[in-house]
Length: 137
Image (cartoon, rainbow, N blue to C red; front, side):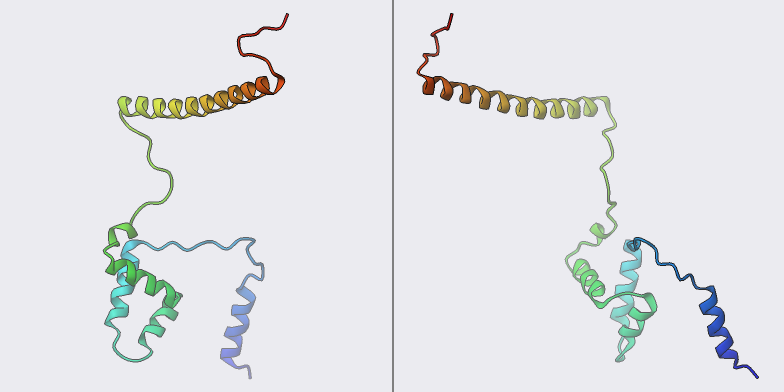
């Protein structure tokens, strides 16, 4: 006679994939989820309830502490902030401004390089004893 719990465990082991993914996926939490968990943890009054909550949700206590600090600092709006690149400017004026700012930055770098080259040429001219207006035949 087979033990039913033993059969369930064997089935679970057979169904599990022994392969380990090459890179673990980072979990992302929404602001609503974070707020819900912090509120649930604050509502816990008996010893061990917070630990049970964290185990049930698969969280670490450091995350809970971090989310509480963020809530207390009023960074709740920051919790729902989208990550990634900022959206491109919409208006033609804003696009032109962004283009001009990029060009300005590029030209500043180019000017800095040219000034460095000129300084090196001046120093080399002084070392060789040549006057700036003097020309070689």
